[in-house]
Every structure is written in C-alpha cells, then in structure tokens.
Length: 264
Ligand SMILES: [Zn+2]
Image 1 (cartoon, helix red, strand yellow):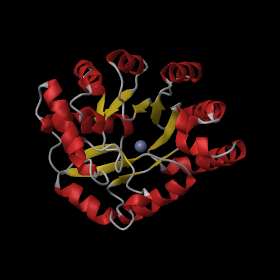
Image 2 (cartoon, helix red, strand yellow):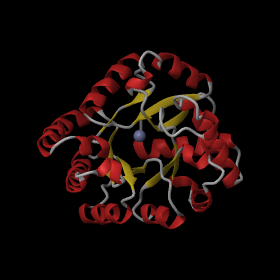
Image 3 (cartoon, protein in one colour):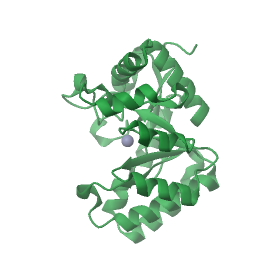
C-alpha cells in the first residue's frame, strides 16, 4: 500500500515557461491532493536548465529527465543537434531518465526533419544503453518506424515508457512485447476515445503508468487554461472505471510501477 501523499505523476513539464511564477503553488496544491513526485519530460538544453532550477527549490519532488524532444529536433539543424547530444551525454548522469526522445511525423511538426529525427532518436537510444537510463518515448504517427528503430538498436536493459500512449490494443502490445511501459494521460478521459478505452482494458496493470503531461493534454474537466498535475485524478478515475478498480488502487499500482521502472 503506497497511499495518499506518495503518489507520482509519471510525466509533465512543470519547468515549462507557461508555469513561470506558479510552480510553487502548483506543487503545493498537487501535494494537497496526494501527489508527492513529479517526473519531468525533457525538451532541450534550455528546458534541462529550467528543470534544474525547479529541482533546487523542490529537491524531493522533482524528477529530472533530459533528452531531445522531436519538436526540438525538428526546430534545430544537424549541427545544433550534434552539439546538444554532446551536452546531453555529459548532463545525463544527473537525470533519472533520458527523454523525451522519439519521432513525431505529424506534417506540421515534421516539416523537413524526418531524417534528423531518425538520427537523433537512434543516437539517444545508444545513449540510453551507455548511460543505463530508462527511456521516455514520444512517438506520434510513426509507429512502424519507431518499432523498426527500437529493434535495430535494441531496447536497453533499463527499458522505458511510451509517454501519453493513445493508440489501439495492437499497438500497445507491440510496445509491451518489447518490455516498455505505457503511460496514460488526459486523452483517456474523452468519452469518445473508444480505441484507447479498449486498449486500456486489455493492458496488464503492471505495465501501466499515469501522467498529466502538464501543462498540455488536459482531461475535458480541465480544458480551460493550463493543465495542472492534479488532473491525474481524472485519469485515475477513468482508468479505474475501465479496469473496475478504485482510483486509489490505480494510483497505488501505477506509483509502484514507476518505482520499479525509474527508481527514485
Ligand atoms: Zn511531455
């Protein structure tokens, strides 16, 4: 039994500048609702520095995660990515996990970055092997390419999580077969998201995580304004309904899973 006051938000962006000036209140509020630890998702070098600042103020509650997000990769050139990868290799020992890393092939994100995204993803998988850190994966509209690259470079021993998984049961199984955890966020709370509902019903509880992805991807109840980490209560409630379990049990189980995957 983990219980109130010790639950974990497996993925969010509290260092995002959109939260500037509000982080302390935000963390206090979420702690008042039983959350204790907020795992971050890395974007790029500027974000890693902001995470470190936040961790200085809340050392027991912030989990550092450094990586090059596909958005960042899409917005920078080869040389800048190479430089950032070198920086990442030296910064990584301080972090609990490497990511966000992966592929985002939505045309408005990808533009001309397809090859660069593939290269930087591969380099980060190699870094995950070398540094023995679990991976935090951001994979959108690139399922087959993602599996191909994961199989080519191999899923590292420390495994990883697919953040904000929002696909079918068959796609979930592809990740589960490779030992990866699936982190579920706000999109599961949409009543019309039947495909994800069915996938969650089929998912083994021991590979499930829950996340806010704060300040993005709010459940419908939080659609106005920025999404606070405490919204994972809505996620826990929805998963509880799908799994016929109490939301408290979902929070306990997913927190236990997080400890197994990431440590702390
Ligand atoms: Zn994220």
